[in-house]
Length: 83
Ligand code: FES
Image (spheres, rainbow, N blue to C red):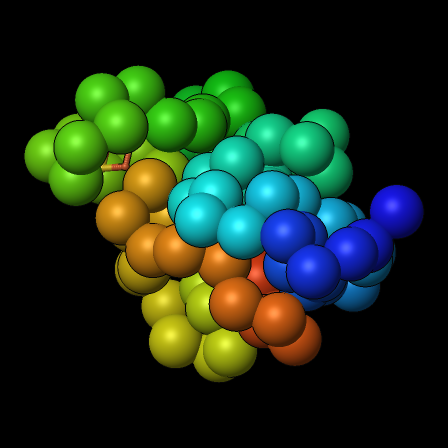
């Protein structure tokens, strides 16, 4: 349930609420989604959590290749996986 300590955004069109200060990688995980799919078709998600591996790439508000582990959630964000 959203409140003043939560942020609501969309992941692949599905509304998700997370605690304020959570990264987009957390929102993608809460949504039960993988961040992207590897060239061999395997689901990929956050690995290092510190901006080095690029496994957590998503599109945010139409901008591709955003490292979701490095970006804090903001209300109204439109996050798309496989970006
Ligand atoms: S989890 Fe490694 S760059 Fe985001």
